[in-house]
Structure formats: structure tokens, C-alpha cells
Length: 488
Image (cartoon, rainbow, N blue to C red; front, side, top):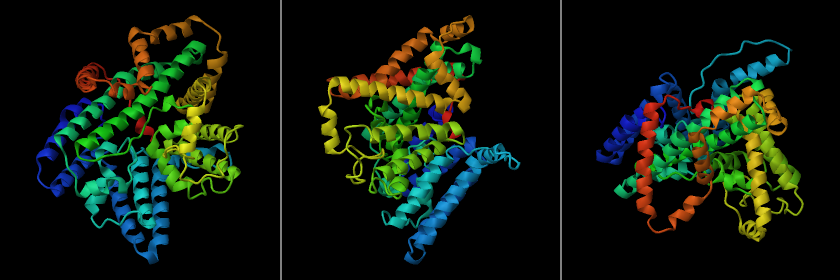
């Protein structure tokens, strides 16, 4: 079951929300959410719900283990090994077997294991809980039910954001659901649903059609249509699901941290990664980058640490060389920005400054940004969007060969045969062009400007109701509703 389905919108979510609203006491409410979350996951993964339960039970026990000083180091090491082994077996076993076979040294059977949806998300959440208990950031939770709710809570189970236990620890045990908060959450959910159904799905039609086309049908025009379409598809899909998660969280009395902050408005790759999928980048910053030494051991070590982080970031997204190359590509861009003339080195800053995303900018950097000329800001913005777009072409491609082919056609494909032009014209429908224009506006921080205007609230509610209506009509009349998180 996915959020952007009529079953979820019209049956599952309303039923769970109404029951949660009327049930007395936090224990009954939590029990309902646990049952609902397991049903939600079992709807699409009836066997792997036991894997989810096993992961929760294992990390609950590890949390209790590492809370004992004598067993803390051994316990946290065991938790890291067990969680990464679980993730590795189900997500990377086939990829590793194929990589070994590609060397020609030996041949081993390639395991055909179906990927449990959301395993990367709930594994990282589980790890953060155990590590935080080890660090003393949170106390080990003695109630298995509370740990299970934290790990399995359906709004963020299969598509993020990655929520840390200390962020919602108090709300698991005590929270208030108000009419105002529920209404605000509903509106946020509808906004995310609209991003997914009305924008991302339309962009996906063009992107999928061109990436699946014969090589002879791809030229400079079709390649750019595919690249731009996927640029907007992935943003409005990812941020749409995050909006839906944050909205549902508030409907049930939980408050998750923001996950996207208009990343396409960034003026550098460094800034882009402070705005894009902030819960993931913040996780890597806190649990990998800083333990590696962060930026405390000089510029060269800082660059190496970033490469390691972005290699892991790419690998986290999927078992494919394209994801790894995409991660290393962003690491390379960050290295260039690290050594760019006139930029202050990282060695003199502490890790409290924003070196890896997931952290705010320090005052010096904000002052530096404000001091830039308008021309430099425009150049930085164009460079960032183009660089991100190039990276996403590799990210979207099925193979590196296909990704490099599309990049070549984007800049050298000056052939305009009938097959390529026909493919291009089939994508440039009035609907596509209209949604493309809306995408460009919606990806910019226009909402912040509108929120300061009089009459915003009534307009927002009217827009939300209209968006919900259009989403239901779209889902009722179309079977095309891609779920790109199946790879994660």
C-alpha cells in the first residue's frame, strides 16, 4: 500500500485517524498505530512483516544491552554488524555476487531475493536508536511496544524521512492531537499528495517514455526533455512523500523535522545538500562523517571523509553502479567547491558548522552569501541546477552505459530524425507543458512569499480541497502511479 493510492486515501488513513481520535488513553492509541502500521506493511509485504518485527526486536534488545556499561562497546558493534548484515543480505547480495562474477575469477550463484520495501529507512532508524543509547543521548527504552512503534510507524516506514528516536521519544509516551494540528496535518498531506500525483506522475510519463526508448529515438531535444522531467519527477516525488509523512505525523500528534527546503534554489552543491533529503544527509553526518573525523583533521582528510560519505549515500539508494557513481560525482563536486579559490578552508571550522548537510549555515557563511552580487548568485544557481540534473541522469539510468549515452546526447545529439522528433512531440502535450511551468514555480520558495500575504489561509484551504479532488480524479482515471522507492 502506498500513500498515493485510493485504498490508502479513502479507507486506510480515514479509518485509522478516526479510531485514533476517539480512542481514550495513549496506550490504546499506540496499540492502534502499531497494529495499523503492521497491517500497512503487510498489505504489500505479507512475509517481510516478520523481518520488520525481527529488526525491531533485535534493536530493542541491543538497546538494553548497550545501556550496560560493561557490554556497551560489544553491544553497539554487534548492532552495527547485525543491522548492516541484514541490509546487505536483502539489498546487496545479488549486486555483490554479480560484481564478483564480473571479475571472471570465479562464478557464484546470484541470489534472487525480493527487496523488502523501506528496509533502508527502518534499518537506519534502528541503528540511530542503538547508537544514541550507546552515546547516552537517549535512555534505553524498556517497552518493546514503544520501540516497535518508533520503527514501524507507517507515515515514515517506507519512504522516510529518517526519524531519530530522541525527536519523538516524548510524543510516543505523551502527545496531544488538536483539531487545529490535525487540520494543519491534513493540509500538509494533501500538498504532498498533489506534488506526487499531479506533478511527479506527469513528469514520470515523459521521463519513463524517453529512458525506455530506442537509442535512435534519443537526440538533444528528447534527452533534455527526459533530464528536466526526471529532475522534477524525483524532487516532487521525494518531497511529496515527505510532506505526506509530516502531515500524517501531525494528524496523529507527532512532529517530524523538515526533510526538504527548496533544494533547487541552492547556489552551490554544498548548499543543495543542506536542503535535499536532510534526514538522510543528517544521518550520515552524525553517524559516519563526524566519527570519521569530520573536518577536524585538515582539508585533505575532510575531502576524503566526504567521498566516503557520498559513496555510502549513493550505495544506500540502491544496488547499482549508477547510484555509486552518482554519489561519488557529488563528492567530486564538493571537493571542487572545497578547493575553489577564495573559499575558506574547512580545517579551521568545527563540525558544528555546516560541512555536511543536515545542519544550518553559520553566521559567517550567511554574511558571505548576502555579500555576493546578484550575477554571482545567478551563476551559482544555474551551475547547481545543471550539475544536479547531470547527476540525476546517471541516477535514473538503468546502466552506466545508458547514463553516459544520455549525457552525450544532451550536448552533442544534433540529429533530428523523424523517430526522435516524433518521440519529443508526443511528450510535449499541453498537460505536460502546463505541469512543467507549475513545477518550475513550485520548486522555488514562492510559498514563503505567499504566506506573508493577506488572505493566504482561505486560499490555502481552497487550493488543498481542489488539489485533493484533482488527485482523486487522477487516481480514479489512471493506472500510472509509479513508486520509485521500491529500490530503497
